[in-house]
Image (cartoon, rainbow, N blue to C red; front, side, top):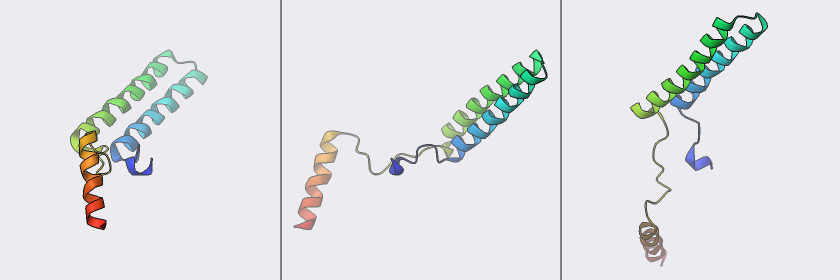
Length: 87
């Protein structure tokens, strides 16, 4: 799992931080009883998801792993190449 770097990207961290702030706003709004502020907090949570996805699409998300093969044939070829190289 460490090779996949799941969630360890600027896009993921930014999206989560923005969403966390939105949850905080909505939580405070529930204590104050302010319906408008609850909706504003939920809008910030959605904004966090949009920003995270946009940053991911811009290249700041998870990059393709070199440890993952695209097909079974590619994996077999790599295994055979390693066997030849070590022999």
